[in-house]
Amino acid sequence: MSAGQSKQKLSTLVLGAIGVVYGDIGTSPLYALKETFAGHHPLPVVEANILGVLSVMFWTIMLLVSLKYVIVIMQADNRGEGGSLALLALVSELTAKRPRTKWFITVLGIFAAALFFGDSMITPAISVLSAVEGLDVISPQFKSLIQPITILVLTGLFFIQKRGTGVVGLAFGPIMIFWFLCLAGFGILSIINSPQVLWALNPLYAYRFLALDPWVSFLALGSVVLAVTGGEALYTDMGHFGKYPIRLTWFYFVLPALVLNYFGQGALLLNNPEAIENPFYLLTPAWALMPMVLLATAATVIASQAVISGAFSVASQSVQMGFLPRMEIRQTSDKAQGQIYVPFTNWTLFLSVIFLVLTFQSSSNLAAAYGIAVTGTMMIDTLLIAFVIVAWRWSPILVFLLIGSFFIVDLAYFSANAMKIPQGGWFPLGIAVISFTVLTTWKRGRKLLFDEISRQSVPIQVILDSADSVARVDGTAVFLTSIGEGAPSSLLHNLKHNQVLHERNILLTVIVEDKPYVTKGNRLLVDEMGKNFFRVRIFYGFMEQPDLPAALELCAGWGIPFDMMTTSFFISRAMIVSSPKPGMMKWRERLFLALSKNAMNAADFFKIPTNRVIEMGTRIEI
Image (spheres, rainbow, N blue to C red):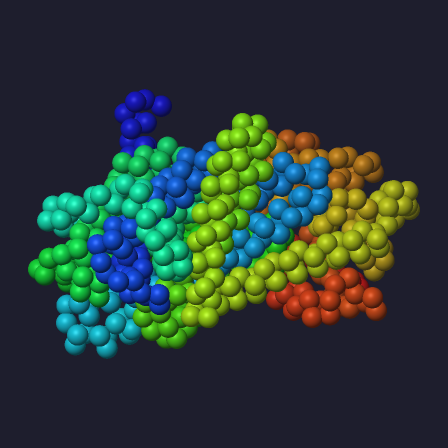
C-alpha cells in the first residue's frame, strides 16, 4: 500500500472513529456538570465546589478513560477485537487450566454483558431528552413539547434500524466533528472571560474537594461519573477502527474538546451561579441556541445509534458463544461485516427506552438511573484486565499500583452510584439481573441438554459395522450434531424409520472458538471414518455469522465436493421435557424450556436451503 493510500485509509478510520466511538462520552457535557450541582444530591454553586468538581472530573477522565482504557486495556485486544465478551474470551484462554478461576471469570464477563443491556436502554433516553430540553432554555412555552419530540425522534431511530445504518453512518463523522468543534469553541469563549477556572487542572483542588466534606463529595461522585459514561466504548469499538485511530482522535481532538467545554461551563458558573439551571445551553450565545439544540439532538441520535449497534453486537456474540438461544440476525451490509440488525433486541430496547422517557420524564430524573451499569462494567473490566496483565509478566509492583488504583476509583464511583438505587438505579440493575439470569440459564440448560444427548448417543462404530447390510440411496446426507462424537439421533431415526443410508454421510458439528474470527484455512476439520462416512467440524469466531452451505463448499479441497441439489440436511429437533430429578431449579428449567420453544429454527440460522432440510423429532429429559 502506497503512502497516499495509507493516509487515505487512516483519514477514513479517523473520520469513522469520531462519528461512532465518541457519541456517548461526547454528549455527556449536556448533563454531567448540571447533575453534579443540581441533581438528587445538590451542591452549593460556589467557587471552591466548582473548581473542585472540575478537577475531579478532569482527573477521572484522565485516569479511567485515557490511562485505563485508551493506554492499558486497549493493549488487551482479542485478535484485534475489544469489549467485555472479547476480553472474557481472552481471559478464558489464559485461565483454561484453572476451572474454578475460569468459572469466576465467566460469571464476571456474563454480568458485564448483562449490565451493558441495562446501559443500552438508558443511554438513548437520557441523551435525546437532555438535547431536546434545550427548547426549554429557548422558551418555557416549548416545555410541553420536550417529551413528545423525544419520543418521536427515538421512534424514528429504532424504526430505521432494519434498513441498516450504512447510509446514515456516512454523515456521522462530519456531524460529530462539528459538534466537538462547537464544544471547544463555546468553552474557550467562556474561559477567556474567567481564566481562573484553569486552576482546576491542579489535582490539589480535587483533593481539597474530596477531603473537606467526604460524605458530600462521595455523593457528588455519583454524578461526576456521568462525564466518563461511554469511555468503555473506546475499547469496544477498537475492532472496527483499530487502536491508533482511536488513540489519535482521543488525545488530539475529543479529549481537548470535552475538557474545554466542561471548564467553559465552570467559568460560566463562576460568573453566574444561576446558570446551573442548564449550563451547557446557557454557554451558547442566544443567536445559536436553536441550531445548537438541533445539533445536540443529531449528536445524541448518533450516540444512541452507537449504543444500539453495540447491543446488536453483544446479542449476536451471546448467541454464538451459547449464552442466548438462536435468534434472527440480519446482515444489513454486504460490505461491512459488523453491520447487523437483531429484531428482538431492537424492539426490546425500543419499548424499554419509551418506558423510561414516559416514566422518568426528564434527564435529571434519568441521571439517577444512569451510572451504576457503567461503573459496574468498568469495575469488572478492571478485574478481567488484571488477569491479562499478570500473564504479560509486568512488574508485580506496577501491576499492584495500577490495578489497585483503577479498582479503588471504580469501587468509589460504583458505591456512590449505589446510593442512587432507590431514585432509579434499580432499573439498570433489574435489567442486568434479568439478563444475567437468562444468559446463565440458557448456558446451563444447553450443557445439561448436550450431556443427555451424549449419554444417549450410540458409538459411531456400531453404525459403521452394520453399514454394509443397509440399503444405500444416491446423494449426500448431512447430519447436524451438537456433540463431536457418537452417532447423531437424526441418523439413528433415519435408519430406524427409512432403513436406508445415503451414498455419502457427513456428521457435521459447528464449533464457536474463543476468538472473534477464524481464517478460511482453519474453517474445516475433516475426519474420514470409512465406508463413505465423514466427520466434519466447522469452526467460527464469536463475531461471525454461520453459513453452512458456504463452509461446505470448502470441503472440495478435502476431496469431498458438494452438490446442494443432491444433498439433504437432517436436523434433530429436540422436544425437551423435565426429568424426575432436574439438573437445575424448577423455575430455571421452565425458563429454559420457554427459551427453547422460541429459539430460531436451526435451518434458518445456519442458512440452509429449506427445501433441502429434513427434521427428525426426539424426546430428551433434562
